[in-house]
Image (cartoon, rainbow, N blue to C red; front, side):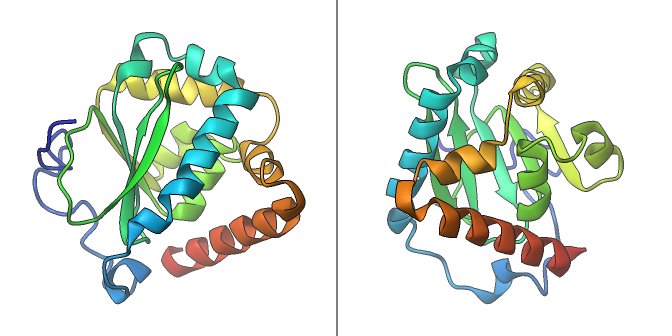
Length: 184
C-alpha cells in the first residue's frame, strides 16, 4: 500500500478531522505499540470472513478498496481491505500516513453501533455522528453489506474467542459505552 496523507481523500485535507479531541483518550495516551493488537485484528477479520463470507462477497468491486476507519476517541486508526480471498484489518498510529479510498470517522461506540446495525448509518451521518468521505460507491456497498448481514457481528466476533467469548463481549460493550459517554 502506497503511503499518502491518511486524510488525502477526505474533505478535511491534511488537517486532523476532529480538532475537538482535547479531552479524548487519543490525546492522553502515547503512541501505542500496535504490533500487540495485530494478532487480535487478524483473528477478528479471519473469523468474520469464515462466519460471514457473504459480507465480503457482497462488496463486489469495492472489496478491493481500502477503508480507513478512524475511531475518533482512540489513538489509532484501522485499515480494512475486505478482499474476500485475503481480508485484512490493520491498526496504525494516528500520525501515520496511509493512502485510502474511503474514510469513516466516529467514536468507537458509534462505529460499533453502525457495524452491528444497532443504529441507522444514514441517521448517524446526517446527525454528524460519523463522517465519511472518498469513494461513495464503496461506502454504500459496505453499508449495504453490513445492513444485510444476519445476526450480531459483535457477538460473532466475541464467540470466535471460545471460552473467552463472554468476557470479550462484556469488554466490547463496556468500552463502547465508555467511548460514547466520553464524546457524547
